[in-house]
Length: 286
Length: 256
Image (tube, rainbow over all chains, first blue to last red; front, side, top):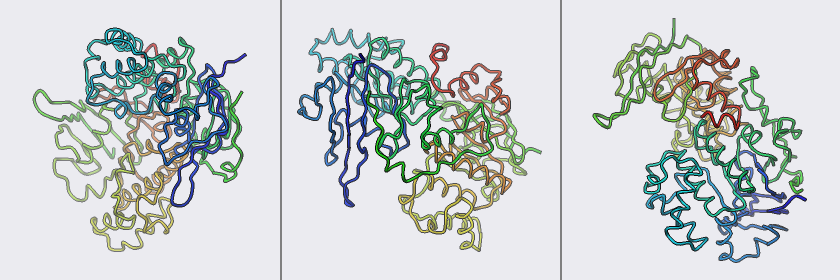
């Protein structure tokens, strides 16, 4: 029996506008076990909003509605803001795209990691300090003692992102939501950061939601992929079989990528069919 | 006869202890009508080379020629007519309060064209935007449409060389395909020479005939696209870039 960490049914995210309500996520359903689940789509497809909605990080007047949004069977929508605070960071963590905007610029890195740990566990300073150093080592930072005393602006992009991952995993959450965690990084650093996420997820048996626009990356990194278009899921497939996907949108996206191994005189141009946005969302539950 | 030639180009920023050598001893040639790529990671100096050719940085040494122009610190007006640049982020490179008509009209009048009205229509048509787009402002355009306007602006003075600085990295892949197809068509139609900076090897392989691979300000390898497709790089760094462009491979991570 497969364990289900997260169970989502008919998730909707709505923003009121002057022209009436705008639905950014329109009835998405999926489950997450101890697996690496990829969500791909283009900008505006609702993939980031889906990730944020799970943690209830949509600011009013935006609304989150769902028939079911359950973490270990507990309804996340029924929780108070105070109870959600205990889940965010401790049970479900999120790594965002750019470390420059996620780290507090006027606080030393060590303090930031320790603060999160102490907030969620109530541990003492020395225990938190030891844990922070251990986490920095786990994300392959060579000189953790120096980095503990450093300021965010002294870090490169790759270092910053590894620090974010250390910070998000210090509380040993069960689910990590990574929203384009490597898009701001160079390819060589990207591989390092991915291998760190890969190893930690595997060793700790976590569930990972990996949000990305990069089809090749998701196909090679994840176990299962949801393809989103206009706020809905248009296709669900095994990551290894992404290149055999059948939906015209997924096929179109794959065809529009230039390839090193297969030269083509012209790139395929995606012809959008209005019916894709109207078709009911495919369920990613199992 | 090569259209663009760069010999022993050095570019630096700052003085004394703060001096940073952004480009070290770069040498390459781009034949007339060819498309040449510059790939590398952020900070490797690839965009700096474009900026040096364009005249946007002043602290450089070495020899650069574009066609008949021997490039010095000060360049004739004809040079700026012949060489144009398209920037990475169409959200930042278009003036938010100038309409498409103003953007193109200003460029055309600066370069002394008379028949501005017809030329604007022709340019919009060239980049696949209809006359309906003429009086729109940047905020009324999508990312791909904005990049088309930026390309139209670059085409306005009828240049023979266009420098492209990551022209599609801010765009979704489906829009990237449209813009790359457009750039390929325009090169064919107007007999343009391209120098294209990108971090995406697949894009460079699609667009260019040859590419220079840069690391820490140096060109470590100049390779033809045929060699790239055959996965036959000579430098380990190029090999690493090629491996990474195929997505995530656990084995590649260890060798990094």
